[in-house]
Image 1 (cartoon, one colour):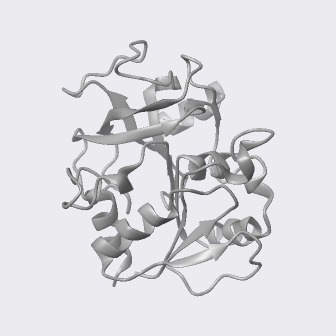
Image 2 (tube, rainbow, N blue to C red):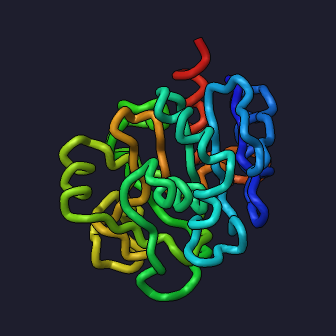
Image 3 (tube, helix red, strand yellow):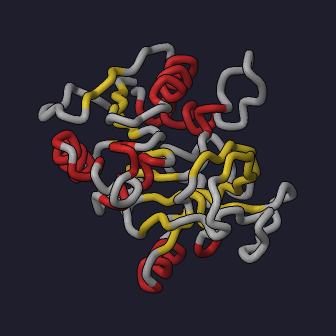
Length: 233
């Protein structure tokens, strides 16, 4: 699987993502600079977490207008696979590649803690390593992770099965109004979504930090094994 990771000033999770991809795929991803105007031949583009351009204006707003994002938009429009995690999810919404927006967390504080996610759709290249209803743990590290969208966009996401992951309690119970179950207050407790063709995925938690068995649990590994199995022919 040929993967590329986009690096912006302020990105700080590219090494975590590169390690996760290499552990699962056996192949080191390429690092793509935000000023690049041409993409190499790739199967997957990843926009990792961090604070692109210091999160000035809004989180991801400046990164969405970097030169490389024109290429990412075209790559996605051609049916290419794109994964955005945390700040990467924010950039994908700011670039209008995915719908909605990420607002300040409901508690108005930065969250650095684990969350439990329930897999809502197991029919995508990002989620086929799980079964719908599976619950796994992943770390949060964000101040602007409160997902919101218009009523029509939320209806479309729900009706078309495009909610990939939802925040839940450890036993898989959904409680949108409970801070321990939906820590950032996201609408419908949405933690991650898919594009209309299911080839672009954005999520706020960090599955890449739970892949290496030498560092602890491997709850996040199925996302990456799913991609390898789907994209390596």
